[in-house]
Image (cartoon, rainbow, N blue to C red):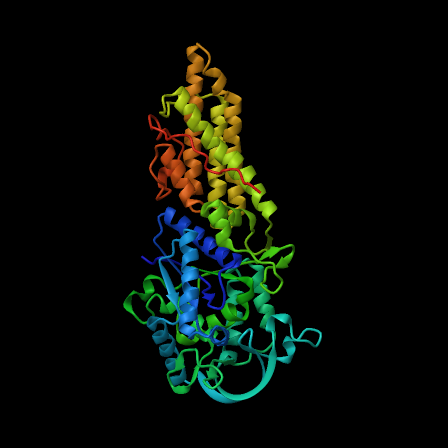
Length: 509
């Protein structure tokens, strides 16, 4: 049986991790964990893109070898994955022998079949984007800022026959306009394809760039960074080996909107088609994190260190915020005020308060053990009905990438559990000598406990550590698979609960 294969864009080794990098990893991790909880075997890949002109320039500026610079950056990115509890199964670096070998294998194969040729090129080159650009790329007669410095060059290079596949690519995209999510991104790609494609320059002469994978058929050149980087998705899973089909084709490429066109939606499917490989099953394209309405960037001074947030408030809190706040495909604005509001209102007041109340009352009124529910009146029936609706909506939203809406629904249920406690008022009933009131206290605690157990199970892909902690405090086993763990039942009857804790301490400004 094929694994569910999920990949992220590999980060570029030219700077430290930022919020966009962290969000993409968390997003992919939530998808991967959700699949595992549903019983699917998953292979989750991420990694680092280490070649190219910008890396070479940065290394020279710092007075170190490019490999040393990449090793340092790799430590930062793998550290980010560790600190954010990212459950990737593999981490590929494009300087690894396993990757270089596959890149050269594909290049040689395409060259032998006449898909790559040598020609002289005269035109414009963007150092920042490490790509050739054309007059049509100008806006109002000027090169857009994203290209940085653009220079005119003339040199011989090797070209991949990208243009031969334009009609095929259009037909493929039109045959399945949902292969890219959100679907409107497909229309953007098709709009790009209305203009004729140029063949892709896939080499750089060594006198201009040494830091790259050498062409197997000409030692005077190295490979264009995108032709190198995109191959990671197949090099890391053993392209050409028997176990390759265990993962390929990829189920979800998770990438930012800025690298969909042309790299992932033009170059990559055509490269796969030319190599005779199946195409990706789906692209999940997310937007940008903004600050004060503008894209975060070092040049503007609007930046954010995601690891500072995770260290200060906890990785699960960071994970919850980015998944709760962003609608897939759209941009989202970050502010400390918004972060604090979500933290206080939803995590501390709703979830944290419910856990604290339940543990406190169970310790005081039930000798620290979850009691048995013996009453089934309208308040209890309403909670169960709300759970059934919450469960169904959460799973439905997660299956179609509506993570923020699924979380919103779950926290409505959690607020409902707090309201149920307020309705039953076990703290008042516990003072009564009436046996029927004692049954109501026991039932209230049992219902609150079961609702918390189920909520923690649903929350597992987004907040794995907090969810495990809550289940431990409830005297329940961890939620490794959803299976029948999401059915309302009496699994906590007699369970010994933990001591009262504060899961989400108050934020100090």
